[in-house]
Image (cartoon, rainbow, N blue to C red; front, side, top):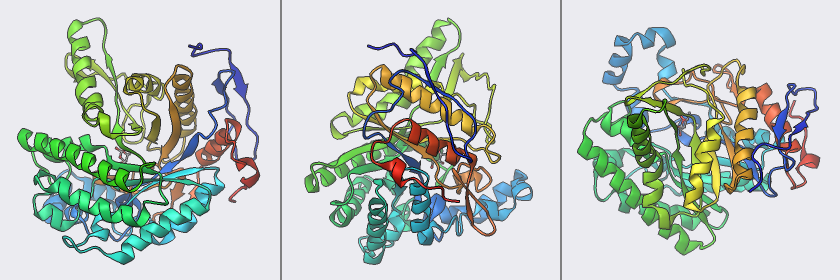
Length: 439
Ligand code: FCB
């Protein structure tokens, strides 16, 4: 195994929109041939015009009353909490992906909105299937590799009304939807993400924060079981149609740390790693071609509580520990699958911290690579400022800033930095020639 940290090479970066930076890396600072670089979005957060369980929940009297009670309606305004037109990406997707291309990306992750495709049970809207077919084709024609997410948290209303993921038939319904999709898009898409962060149902079924706001341990466990089955069924549906398809989930993987030498903290860290990080990957061990890793969180466990040092935080108060990505990736080695970072990013409206976080995150990825984790791509969250679920529009995660009044997109300096990092650190697809400044 090569040393993780040396010898160092320092890459400088040119370009008038670049920020000064150095990416310290090893002699093999170049990322592997074919490494995929890009950004990720999800339908509900960017498309606009949704009619699903989330959009109904956002505008429901009980939700608005709760926001009012917590003083949030006064603070941010009602529009902040209603996804509404979002970024109008449903209509502007071609321009958005062109911008991504101009910013050096060679991959893009986006999600399909199940509620558009199957608005009533068993009745598929062919025009919507065509729409997503066109989206995937547009991405490919720009020379980018599409990563298609089949479920990114939102559900059709009929599905919700039948109990949603609690219903034991949910995996069957999901597989039926996937079957239709794969028949239409299957040949043009190699990378499939069945489920985004399935463990998030802890927020919707155990702690009651996301819709349907339940608090029930048994429901929670049942939903997890149904999601595992849904993934497995979808996996086989896709493989049957296209044996070469690469299929996985995007899992929120956390960097757990035990505070001090207290054995209890170390035991709790092991439990946390097992349940929060490994469980889902383990259960689908035989039905996954790659591991999708979303990385945002470091948790320092102290007597069962999070005792983070919180030296640097994002606008949302999330502690920033980009170096934690290295350990997270090293732990994934044991699953013996290629790894794609399917999300990683920060809420930073002023783009003050993002440049450094981006550099440090990619350095961490590179160190993990040098120590043998087979990382094959990095997709930043997010391409666009978007609707951050129950927090609404105020958190700004985009490489592209979106003006909330005009919806105009403007690349942040991080977008140029990312472009320069991509160009300097190894795209061997003729990308440098294709490169042009979008402004
Ligand atoms: C992830 C979600 C994504 C976005 C980021 C900030 O957990 O998958 O949709 O909200 O967090």
